[in-house]
Image 1 (cartoon, helix red, strand yellow):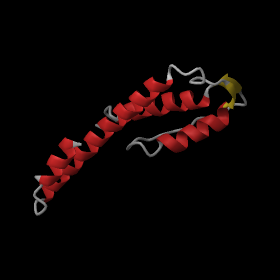
Image 2 (cartoon, rainbow, N blue to C red):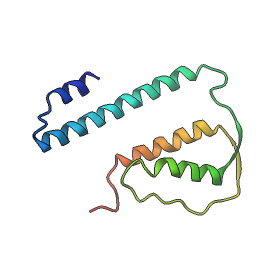
Image 3 (cartoon, rainbow, N blue to C red):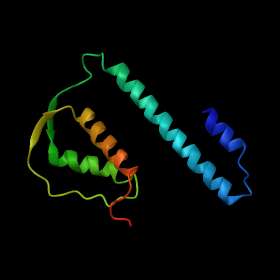
Length: 115
């Protein structure tokens, strides 16, 4: 939080380039802090017996749900292939967490479609 505060306090608001750079720094720092808090919360939950809860998961619906979450993560051409009528016994919360994290990681990699 100190980095964000200092960045914003020292930003020259009359300089568009400085504002843009400060904006990016603040967003990057917020992303880093969000990841840290998420990791700490997950770590705290792992010792609980109900951390993983298996239940039937309609994978076609799961895929649509996951897509609706990840398509806003970054400038990518997200595609959802054809669905299937499969029901898996899984922990939907842990599964969506993993898929969204993989997609978030992909947004930080160079887009293979861009030169």
